[in-house]
Image (cartoon, rainbow, N blue to C red; front, side, top):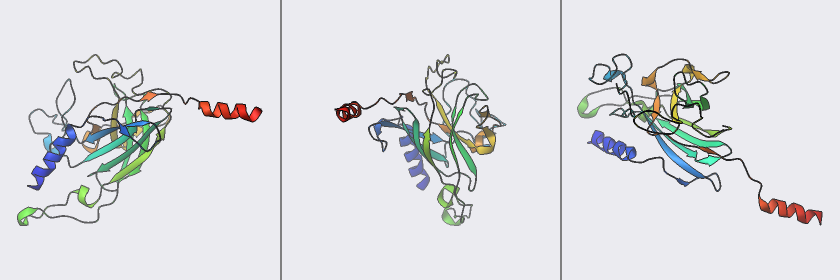
Length: 233
């Protein structure tokens, strides 16, 4: 029953796109994006999955999410502004592991990617037990493996950048937007020459759908100009 409930919740989350909503950053609007596990070692022997990475063998279109979804994350982010503001929370990740949240532009190795922030997951403090007396290791999401990253990044341009394959896609999906990934910190180089160093997808979280951020320069408030004029009188 518990597994069924979890599956129902995941299915509900899958139906939620990046939605506009009021945020904590004043007048700006924010989007919401869910990140999921899409590759797993247990899938390496399954039909339709890569025997080396446990990732779906799909040439076009988005990867489906991993059915059990023990790992997942939620990102709230600004849809427009002079900086990309965000707040990310992850659950069910490996404990005491360093992760980096990135914008990843295709193609590999993601030249020009942007490291949004990094952090270490919380430690595990115990093990759980399976149902009906069958002992099994507790899921990290219940005992640790939580992660929170938030901040703002100067992008100078919108997302995706114009060198990203997803800026003007040629694939059958026709999707336009930026990929947001949570990757192992050791697998990415943030500076100089930002790009991916290694590929360990079973440890990552991938975006459920692509996002778009519009860069808008700050415009001086007219009221401030009026105040300045009054001061000169």
